[in-house]
Length: 586
Image (cartoon, rainbow, N blue to C red; front, side, top):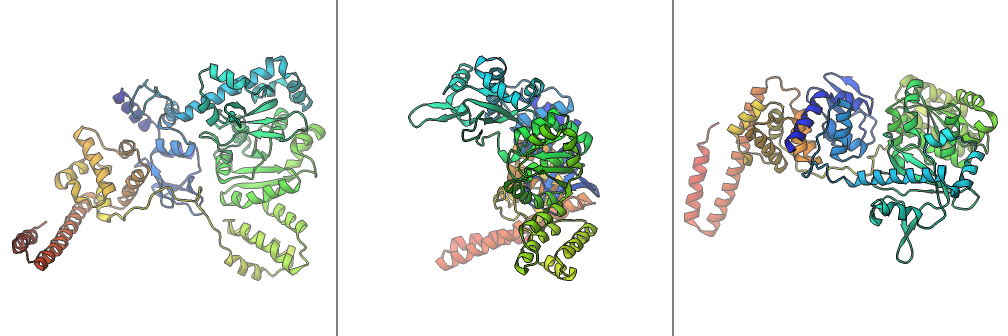
């Protein structure tokens, strides 16, 4: 069966082009023989993420990630290997074999897949309770009062949780799910004493789906004015709030067709416009837009209209996300609702045509932010004028288009009665900190690898004939880098088994992010080597010369130690070894 899986992996690899796969997630720009983009795994302004169509790998020179098309999908969608392979196999129209046991086991589901499944069970349970139970009469009445019809309830799989303490827990246990799984899915909560109870009780339930329409979490709303009004799933292995947009899975085709997305905040703010025909819409679930949400949007469009509640919190949320939107290359407009009105209420009271008209009158991002700041601060006061400037200049700094940046500076100059030269001088002082997502690099610190060793490894991974030649001329101990020795050992083993040691095969055999990074780094080292045979000869000579130098230095140290101790026998033996080394020729 393992052989069947390897064959399937090779078939998927051969049928899909890495450029097409990655371009489905992030926009790529052709640069010579390769493609470049801003890395999707860390926040950066200057693209350092390279995709090689000839080598079928990606590599970021900023944060160090690297791999092939399968590892990219694994990282980007946070999936187990088999889950990522299944996505690509479906894309390539390749049937996956039924496999039991081993590292790629299909028999024991990953914990993430268990959570997806129990969330699906929960979504179906709550939905069935809403539609078919007498207990949910008030919930159905509440949704009808919010103008939701049966079609949209079915579409979004809305549900209801009963007031009982453990109805869902007992139901799911009968389905075979343990208390541990239910707790890790965020569906039950431990009590003060022993025992657990349902997280969601007597609430309207909103399942939250990822872009593949898998349930990852839930929101629950009370039907009266009791607090808390909303209760949401905690973060789990499959649900991190800042990585998802509510309703996006239902909106993808309309977003692509219209080439823009409308961003709102909450469940009803999305569902009511959607029900009235505005289907290119997604919701942030009440948070400021994150980098990952913005990059999720950019998979389907580069244009967005943000329509937040026109209260202090809503405007603060939009302001916090503005600079990120610019940095990530999104063309953004901001629509402003009347005070105290949300999109849900506006569509129900004013109608969908008025809503669309309001969207058409949306301000560009610069004008919106400047207007808010002018309302907040008094530009006649020098200190407050400086505050406005300090807020606006970082935004302008992030605009890559020089013409647009110049126009914004001119507008700011006119609005604040400040000389453009002074603004330009202040703009030059602005420093933008592009930090890594998650705060830290994911790769451990490594001892620097000698260029000759890295080039030899890259050449042998590219060409099985070169790999065979390296195996004849070098031993594992000739590689000083322990990481490279592991990679070369894997490559040699594949040759012994009669396999073609491609980068993709080596990466999956190693199953290690740091080693995958080195494989990709080694391959990038060889790009400008036209005469590969000469490069190989020169690097092998360099490696042997370096190794010989190291041995001589070690012998010299040992000879000094033997001389100090007065060990004549040891000293003579070491002198003979040194003479032998001096006679070595390459």
